[in-house]
Length: 163
Image (tube, rainbow, N blue to C red; front, side, top):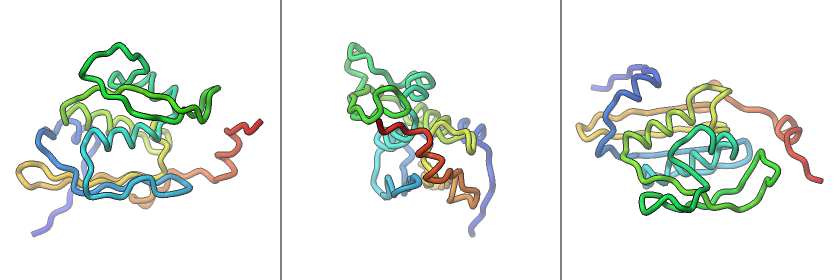
């Protein structure tokens, strides 16, 4: 028997995601597919989501990422391209804290929540998660919901300065 129920981000935040597994994940922006996989860790998926957030918003809104190199062994380096800053396109290393699955999921939900005002500027995100009890949850934003959060290429180019 198949059942389908809608839920809110708050309901998803209350679930215990410990020992859950990402079954499949897709992430797109206006230009290309960023991610389409059936094999990704929670921490790598959070990193891909974080790549879709403008650098100032990323550093201001998440305690689990920093540019500070003196954070210790619980922080892993990840390569990013800065954007929406004076240094657009600059390769930088940011450090993301090793976190339990529940914290990683809170970060992901925070990044994709908000419709057109979501921190993650990817045009659409889809991922399916299997809990240890076998229950699967499918989470969709943007094009996958039938309500695109898109802006046109021309609107995006207005924000970029190529001088």
